[in-house]
Amino acid sequence: MQIIHEIAVLRAQVADWRRAGLRVGLVPTMGNLHAAHLALVRDAMTRCDRVVVSVFVNPLQFGPDEDLQSYPRTPEHDIDLLIQVGNHCLFAPSEQEIYPHGRLGQTFIEVPVLSDLLCGASRPGHFRGIATVVAKLFNIVMPDLALFGEKDYQQLMVIRRMTADLNLPVEIVGHPIVREPDGLAMSSRNGYLTPDERITAPLLHDHLRRLAEAIRAGQLIADAEWDTARALSAAGFKPDYVSVCRRADLNHPKPGDRSLIVLAAAYLGKARLIDNLIIDLGD
Ligand code: PAF
Image (tube, rainbow, N blue to C red):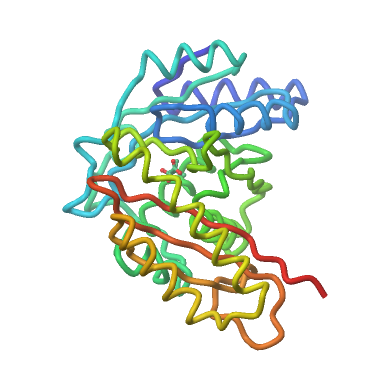
């Protein structure tokens, strides 16, 4: 596997692949790779001739009181896993390479409305940081296709909108959530959980499943959201939000909407966990 740190070197490599008529995929990550990332890489490898995995802990998407400093960084482990899975190229730039004018001097990309809902309401600037770094990665790598996990469903929506609004020629592919055997969605932040919290954590997914069943059985959405938040609090979580939305645009469902999704964020100790579940009400 090639390991590249400079933008110019990566561009030259991708240009060679393009001259050879190869299709290029990008899997953007913040490192500390686990099985869910590897599922994205494997998926990308079935769709493309060459796959670039980027590892960059993007400071622009962390708020001032968030875990930028403590976010797990495991470069050797990441390299081992990417070699095992047969990945072609790792792009691991420095902060100086990505933001040469500093964090405050950087031009940014703002996706309105979508960025202010749900996680955006409690993490101001988070999606601006994501849209900015992903647009930069698209311009650096110029991939045919990029893959993102559906656990970060709002992030996926923001990236799709940004790509469409800016007419970027990149196909965006969402990959289904990869879960631990007990249902907990895989995430680097699961590493913050204590052993006791790790036992409690899958209840987030359980309660979203119960909420989906209640809505299918005809319970009012607002009541189901409230019941779920209360059940999570009783289990030891500090819920940030539990929200049933229209799947297409994350707006509040209107009567007759059939394609819904419930999204939730909740703290469990130091970990802020997010999860979601599609609720398809059929015709
Ligand atoms: O999902 C992530 O790991 C990050 O938000 C991303 C897309 C790599 C941007 O930094």
